[in-house]
Length: 80
Image 1 (cartoon, rainbow, N blue to C red):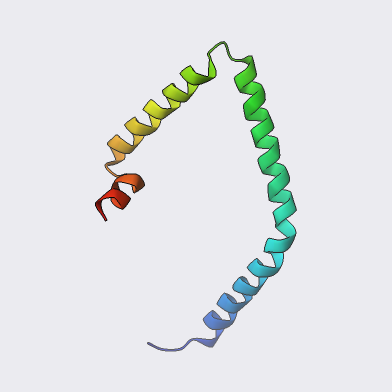
Image 2: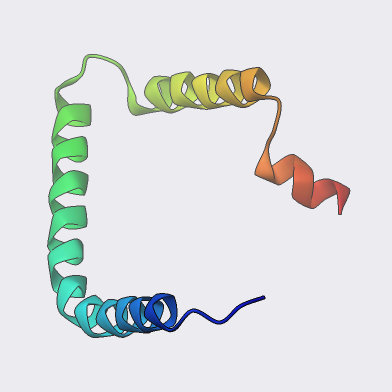
């Protein structure tokens, strides 16, 4: 394999910027996740469904989606 200096420098720069920006982006991501959880909780409180019914519906939808794609991470771990 041939060593390509520009690719190496680009990869090193990307890794360094990810490390440096990761520390600064953490509070922003935390605020975003908090906002999404608040919105979800607010939407669940306003829905006429009980939370258990909604969780069951989402569980069935997830199972159906995994069945259609033909794969599941849980199934892969169980077989290993």
